Length: 337
Ligand SMILES: NC(=O)c1ccc[n+]([C@@H]2O[C@H](COP(=O)([O-])OP(=O)(O)OC[C@H]3O[C@@H](n4cnc5c(N)ncnc54)[C@H](OP(=O)(O)O)[C@@H]3O)[C@@H](O)[C@H]2O)c1
Image (cartoon, rainbow, N blue to C red):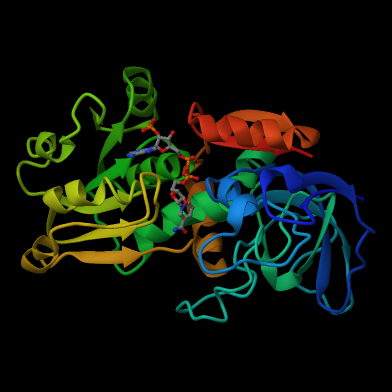
């Protein structure tokens, strides 16, 4: 079968189209014929040097997000049947409960093989059925981008209708955050880089938008929006350059969901604000299967439509990655298999 894999050494030059033998489903395993994948910021980092704490083994099939149809089941499989449309879960071992080191190790697209294969062989416990109303590209966007936004809203700090939420940028996680926060009844502010993107995110439901290029001190501009109270929840996607601003506009007792590092990975900020405002910095790392299933139920109920920007062909993976890197996308960049 056809796969993309990083082979020989790390680096984008070593990402190649290749052939592998078709897998066989063993005890408790399912084969999934992949229909679509979608890209995350993470997928640009993995080929260059690994991601976070893993360096991983090569060859490695990249990408974490995808959807496909179950085409065979091994002995003992009960959760799904041939013909079901399913997404693989990002953390194959994190089914529910609190994260622990064992649950956070087996993530798709590094260190274990990801979705850029014709057929994936997965544990029956590592897949989630997805509703019919979603297109393949939309469904392929759920396992990492969608679930991360969902987890930020539901981990330890369930927000209430009328709460103020701030979202940074109009990337993949950010647009899910806007859609989900609106579904929860929140007032949503988005910071973005252009007037055109501001219009588009307003159309998606954002109540207030600030251009962070025109207003680099955007935290000040939010005072009027929250009536001076501050945000109940901030989706911290920028990291290094945005966190100091977030700490200026979070409400006392509010939560900064620490998700991304788009502007850098280090931190130099006034720690006093975290203490005196009793702010919670809540790290988010995607989420578990129970969360995925809860998210899908909520999405189906509210007919949430994930925003797909563009769909590339399977052989165009590198073009899709370059497009994602350009930052021109509004929503998810996907691959049709
Ligand atoms: N913790 C987790 O579990 C988890 C899961 C998924 C992703 N992430 C992380 O979350 C971040 C976003 O991932 P993604 O896949 O959604 O990325 P993405 O789709 O590539 O998002 C890129 C967008 O972010 C915005 N942006 C860039 N720099 C910014 C800045 N300094 N301030 C505000 N917005 C900025 C830009 O939108 P505008 O031009 O509209 O501003 C850009 O188009 C990444 O750091 C990724 O590693 C973490």
